[in-house]
Length: 65
Image (cartoon, rainbow, N blue to C red; front, side, top):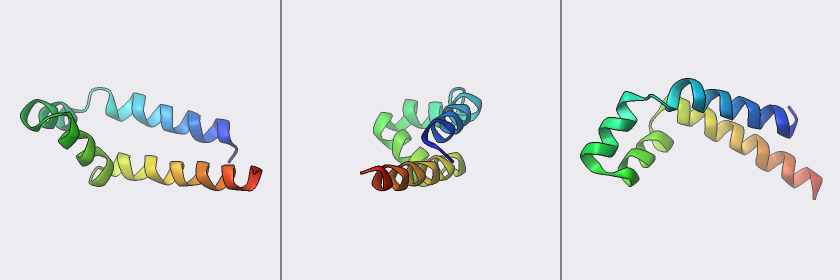
């Protein structure tokens, strides 16, 4: 995948799943923004996919340098 495709995939995931996420809204309200963000990154399956795409971007950047 090239860089543009990866960024498009991440945008699609965020638009589809994260914008109206009930868990994110609940955790943000109850525990704060930092807790909600940590949950999304560390425990959410969509966050896992976004991390995977981030690793792909890092690999692509390393090859271009």
